[in-house]
Length: 55
Image (cartoon, rainbow, N blue to C red; front, side, top):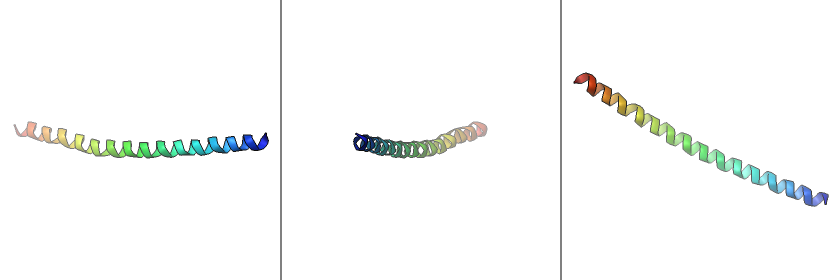
């Protein structure tokens, strides 16, 4: 019984670490996408403002 329980706990722990690693990669991809998206979004209003002041 004790061996089976320890094996079950090991399986749960490894599964937890796998899900944490997956979440980490997903978060890194989201942060990279948002960062590149924010750079583009910051540049577009800046261009619009310069055109607005030029007019």
